[in-house]
Length: 444
Ligand SMILES: Nc1nc2c(ncn2[C@@H]2O[C@H](COP(=O)(O)OP(=O)(O)O)[C@@H](O)[C@H]2O)c(=O)[nH]1
Ligand SMILES: [Mg+2]
Image (cartoon, rainbow, N blue to C red; front, side, top):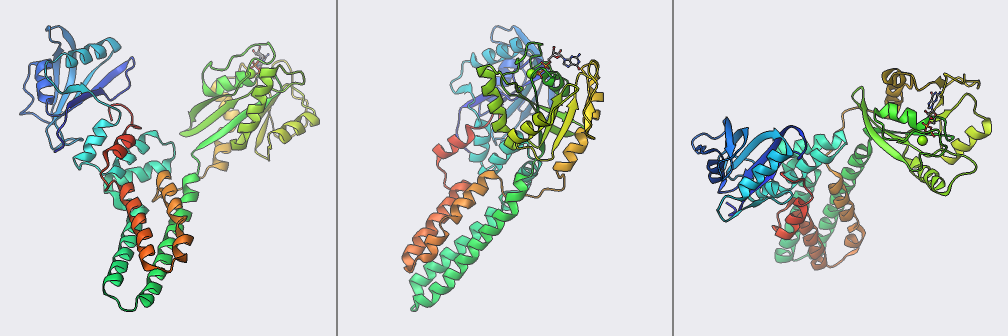
């Protein structure tokens, strides 16, 4: 068991909320619990107790749900306590102060990712599983989330790298045998190069299979464009249900690009509000317009807003500027004061008095989403880092296959195996691991 300090940290955000969670891990967990509650948890692991928490001066901190997990049957493998206090910032800081005042050496606040790091050192999770926990939390891509779950629940063998690693280790063994025991090395070399070729073919196949799936989007990007003062920010605010974009009747109020995520009908959208176009633009606003043009490459659909009329030239200009294909909706806004007068079939009339859901329905968000995002089952056997890893391995192919000297080939294969070992965390270099887990959130 990794001998360690006892660490503590919040594992939910510190925010005014229903509950704030604290986690303690390490050999002094029971001491801390006894100090805070005057209750002996040692005989009662895995039960939830509702207990009063006191500081060193016997002042009441809070009443809280507390669970004790006994080593080794815990997330880190060490003794762990989880304390669920009321979601008050004052109570949270009172609790932290009380824990830090307990007069024992080796109690300290946890570093980012330190709980997961310890779980790995105590063989509770592999490095890949550690990564998967993080990916599961931070990723928006449903394929990646599912892949992370598979790694977490079933183990490293769910990764396409797993089989490839075995394959390359076998080639290495064959080379060693050849060098040590074979008379006719040249004959064996041919067969080894054939194996190496198959290895790279498998690498290529894994890349091809995963690359397209990983790029499948789950979020649809919609950008609202149009002339200044046509009501773009008003529409944006209503769609995302916030008052984030500034709405005024002074032309050119939205000078930068604002975006907001929104979930509608279980689907995720990212909506962009932009600075409008007008001939005499203020300088800042022009920068905003140019920024919008730049981002527009990644936009899936455009809402082109106008008031009543829109000249063919203006429409053409926007379609050109933003490289819009056919994915756009024409929105004639301010229909309360100006009826649409252009005779195109796909014009939607809106005004600021419409209710939000009425507007969302009218904008046909679900249709737009379904047209562009395929929600089939997305099976991945590599995550983004593993894809990059394999791409780098593939770069060694030509150089390796050019070699005629079996000792040089042996050396290169050895390097590839080392790369795999490092990726799987078999080379137990604490600096690398510290670096990996420091990307985690606090309390994890
Ligand atoms: N009458 C009317 N005024 C609107 C409507 N939508 C927005 N406005 C007003 O038009 C002005 C410009 O709106 P804004 O959303 O800032 O336009 P933007 O420059 O395109 O972002 C503001 O004074 C809004 O209150 C509408 O449907 N009807
Ligand atoms: Mg605006």
